[in-house]
Image (cartoon, one colour):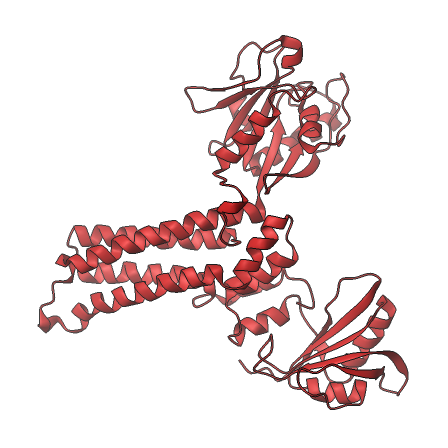
Length: 449
């Protein structure tokens, strides 16, 4: 990639700080340094200089760092101006840089240029965003591994093996006169078996990474006065929701972010579901059903002192594919023990007391198990939903290829399955990535990165 324009942005967080940084990338970086700081910076050496505007007025005094391309983050000439971290000073400095020959950078454009110039692949670029936006220590640790190429190395190894197998299979298409019976060889069967095993292993690791990155969205739902808000408070460890004996207290959904052994969870306490003519309560129930539809998991809470039927769940309110955990709350009043039961339909029932905390640890362990979470130590790298989707599609194509080989189908079908699997894997690192996907990925980055 060759950029003829130069971009600039404030690279430090908004607000007041001791140090603020303005970054520049592009061919005008050296000339901007001369105009702003009055020096020709030596590569990779800090220079103390006065920063001046286009009329020679003093803006600030700080450090100038210059990184010539291609050995820079973006692969282009890069300039960093380190000054004081006041927002007014940084705005004045950025304005002068733009007047000196740069344009404002788009969100994520520095990382996008690093990707387009081959300095990092797409998975590593996303690792940067995940490291900046890490919600837990474990997530940040895995994001750092992704930035260093942990996911990319696994994918590149798969691609290398897949490329070799494709070359072997397609040799039978290119040279039919050689009468090579590829589908009958043990080498093809063995290679496909190994590819399936390794792809499944990477997919398992990616699922753990995605859990640590995105966590679970859990809706707490059920009838009124069952103790949903009390359960939210108990799991959060703080009084997030108002709790009263009056049915229908919760109208607007309440959110609380927690972590269970490093797995992020967003809890949403929803309005109790019942028949009501109150327009405000009806709107609360409409929003509750919306959050139930969007949730990764639903905790359905009932009152153990009132409801005698253990699986009293209104199935109309919960999508078929959404896991449901039935909570029998208020066992401190009913006298029942804290326990976990599993119903014939696969629903898990947990008896607990949100008020006393009895049975809460059973719920925490169940949520980890149901999500397939292995703990922070089980993660290898941070991953996104799109990575899982690409790996799942690649695995499906490899399974189709293995079936073609077993059935001794036409080698063209096997070759096409392998080509599609390679394309799916290439989407992860950016080897086969539509431009519109790149736009969606980098627009979520912060400006200046």
